[in-house]
Length: 432
Image 1: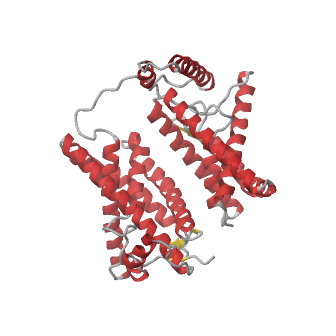
Image 2: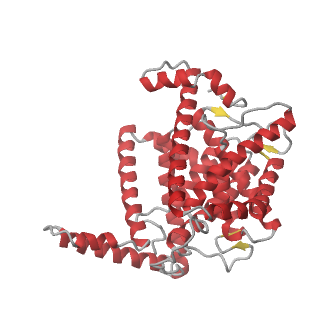
Image 3: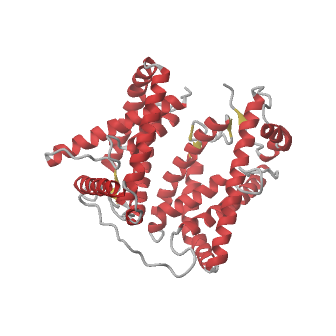
């Protein structure tokens, strides 16, 4: 079943609200009082909405058992990533399963994962069909207006909450220096909102560690797990991934075959994003045992590859890889052998390659390093944008859509089907 953006947005907000109700009710039962457990101030827990959308997009072709397993894995991965992201951004742990058996750093645990699997299965099998029927009862124009209002309100709410939680109140000091008649009113209102949100967060997440106002400035360029280093590792990983897959195809199939995912240069961004993501997520565990890194790499890599397959098929109408002929595959999107390869890659990356690349990057002088990051970032963003436009235009041509604007004519001339077939030799067009 193909879901429209309208339907997905409604599902996101409804499941975010259901998640807020579940979290708030559970906290109220434990603390005997009402506590708003959402990260934002409105009645939404967006992590539930995000997880529900991911399960909705990827669960259509799964059996009941694999739907349960997939829901448990995907929800656990989202919870684990969300917990680490919040801690990295706001220097605080927002929930803690440390008292529960079989937990990992207090962010995820086996009982919660099994619960997520059950909830995801029920939502997909029972919740989605019922909600979609209800959505279509609502007049389309009225529904779109309501969605626009909800999106705007959520955007403002998230922006304000992030500013307040992160402690970045310098804008208030600057605002106080502006001598307009409405300044004092605005500052009093901002102070009240700041205090109210701060007290709500403290009640909802009493174990949240207070944010440190200052952090020691690293002397070397891109030290630790900094954004500059992650960007450079993304580019390096994209290049090395393309080279690795090209050599593997040569050894396995006896032919040289393009494995690039971009139209300019030998870059496989699936590998680039994987290297960047695994570095961010497993950086604190890089010194753990090989067995731990292998297990985490297998699970995260399998979930990542499956989602990449689903999303690229949805956006571009093309399947870029198909493992249907390999044993122990799941919908042809992933297979057990390649999941093990992801696990091996995680071990090799952290034990062999990451220390080398990390030292090389940190030796780059600060000013040239900053320029290098900006140049590569601009190039890769343009490369990805042009590649996406070329693939979308290719899908339009396959459906008989004529070029109606100048940029479509340029795409037809520069990136015709013959050239794209050389770049993406394994791409399979999905019939509607």
